[in-house]
Length: 288
Image 1 (cartoon, helix red, strand yellow):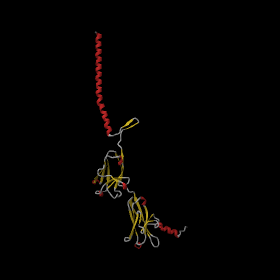
Image 2: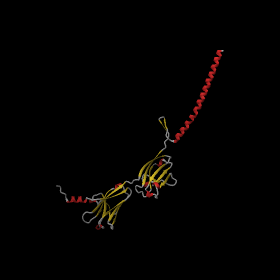
Image 3: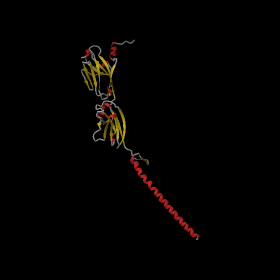
Image 4: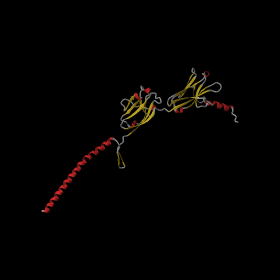
């Protein structure tokens, strides 16, 4: 039977944690906070937080401690009256997801630990939609919002990311916003659409850009089709201008052809009549 040394057993015990872990969630670019309780006798002891679940190396790899409370996006605060310390993580990315350990340093024996699982979700929208428009025409964008935002300022901005988008609804612009409180949505109309209007738009009613309070719209713009000649054949599009032009060329032919036919029939009849008169006269001369 294999015998375990005291050192190996100590290592296993030092890396076993915990019966349960708390779970917290937030969204990219936002922030998240979680708290860790401790007993009253540890009020003056060192507190620390590390990533992962290795107890034996947690203090050495701590991202923050009660002695070094700020480290970039990580901040630790110790509330001794309520006997809990809290870590706040700002400017979240999905790389911040994972396991964290809260540790309390003890003078003798193993430190006291508790575990936390952090989940950072992708910052996304009520809905994402695709829209297509034609140069020179009008296109409408529909943007829903929560009923509690009925009195908030509504907006539409353009940009690849919400952090660098430009407000499009301004006085005198081709973008007009109409709010429909009854349906908890607003409509943005873009007139005289241009090729440069294509791109990503964000519309919403929350100036704090809270997740799930906005709509992302991908707008594509196409040119109006025209007549194209290909391999000696003419392909005509369905544009109204072409239909009107073709009709104008066709109608004169319809009204000009019938009079010409009638004139030809009359002339032909007169020629036949002249021939008949001449033939009759010749026959009378032969008889006499």
